[in-house]
Length: 276
Image (cartoon, rainbow, N blue to C red; front, top):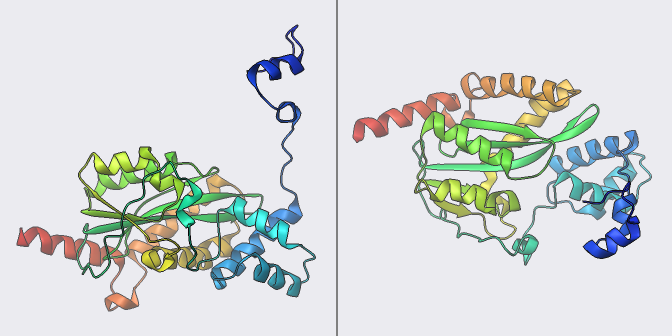
């Protein structure tokens, strides 16, 4: 849009386009090694104490020997896409242009596959850098149906994961998300509405409404991400592919009498098909 080689001065070009000159000359600065280390520590503290806000996370960092202020902690938390999990008003105002849908799961008995699916996004630390993970989970069986990683927090990788899950396993009756902008975006909700899938969204600040996928993140990080210390997105993708195969097919789930998520998913799916 701005051509610095043009005869017209950059100042005049900015005036004509109503742009701020500071944005034209700004050169993005990569995160330092110290900031990457802080983000890893913040992620571990948030996973252990999800109700901690920036003040208490700062205090935990101080206890670990990190000389860091609350403003930096708050900035890094925003960059990571995490916040304290507690009931707080006006949470959905993060993107007022997007439509919010009511929560449909309260009091609902969910005991069969493809009745309810859920999704969420989490921050994934790497040795050099970070990325984001989205997963689609079947609520009744806890089976991970699809997943994607991305280096940006947009809707496209969430839609890709949704399309893959539907192509492999069909459509659920209800799809539950939080009120994040990735899931309230028309690109995502249109993919659900066009297939006749009912959309359910967690209440404001109600992280417990999607608790099963929150528990998935804890398993993923403690059983794979933190142990492996992946160095790149390519390594993350390869490692997570192996982990989710293990999680679905080999990892016994105590809530299901030592059955794996895949056993429960295909078992309840078969019962539903026979009943139909």
